[in-house]
Image (tube, rainbow, N blue to C red; front, side, top):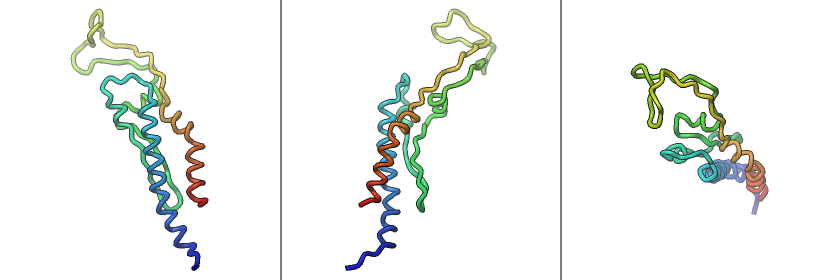
Length: 134
């Protein structure tokens, strides 16, 4: 019986994609459970997805938002002015009267993805080391 190193390494490389995808799906589930913004429609939470890309020894594990305002949830926004798109005034339920513009103070980001990724860095490293050490 002989040990075929090239065949072994080729199989391990192929399995890395599966390992990374499994880790990414675990991080996705954790991000969905620990994101602590207030859900109104739950589209942002449902739109969180994790995955992997790359190959040939260079793999990336990622988390991403499926909504256009995901970056604002993660990073926050700077102070800005909101102007009406249709008509001259803005009005919303609960407002005392219509206004021409709103000076929004900005928002602080929740950093949900950053916390999940930083909190699991050691686990990802240990999983990859274990995978290659058997």
